[in-house]
Image (cartoon, rainbow, N blue to C red; front, side, top):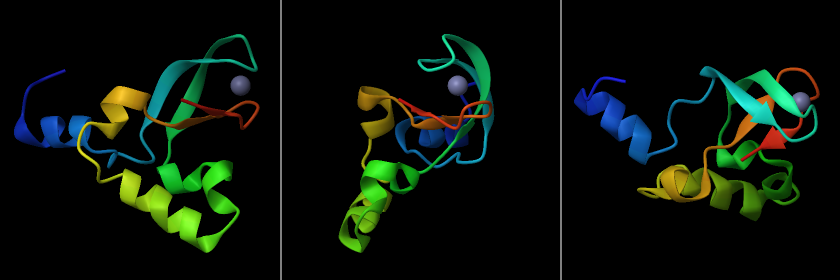
Length: 82
Ligand SMILES: [Zn+2]
């Protein structure tokens, strides 16, 4: 990973949604191809509009994606991993 400014921004903020990455899936029990999503795309945050907005705001909290892990959805079983 290079240290270009935009990469640092993407690292601090959860803004690179749609990016594909290989990651361990709890459900599959193996490394799978997963897609980065917004916090607002996590089912927990989709029950109510207020929660969806809160999830969207979390994308812009500096360091949030660093501290709690970026949410990704498994391309195989559709489980959300963090
Ligand atoms: Zn999976």
